[in-house]
Image 1 (cartoon, rainbow, N blue to C red):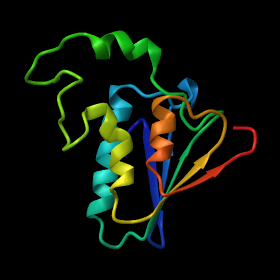
Image 2: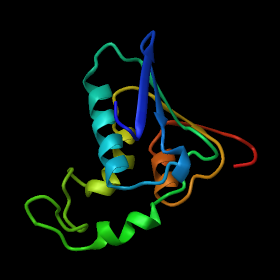
Image 3: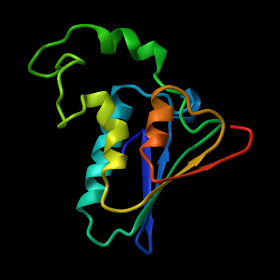
Length: 137
């Protein structure tokens, strides 16, 4: 799928895995795009029956990648990067859609959470229908 997310489908169940283990699956622009695009692709696949959303390595998702925060907050070319206040996906802006997309899927989403789920990672987890959380999370 992308460098940020790996998707495998078996018998109608999509295993969606965040794969930035070296950054504890922290959210940057590429991860936001990958989460949104992956959810859209799954929603279009009429054969899909469910999704399991998880993270590789030590964490489900550590939240915003602080090393990318300055770049994300900087004003950009209005044609390619709308301000954060702009609703680009109905009621959500681009980063919010990374979590909201899972909430609005037509199939059930199960989040398998371990390690940490902080900030935006917690929001992504909350976008699921069912949360299966390791006791030490």
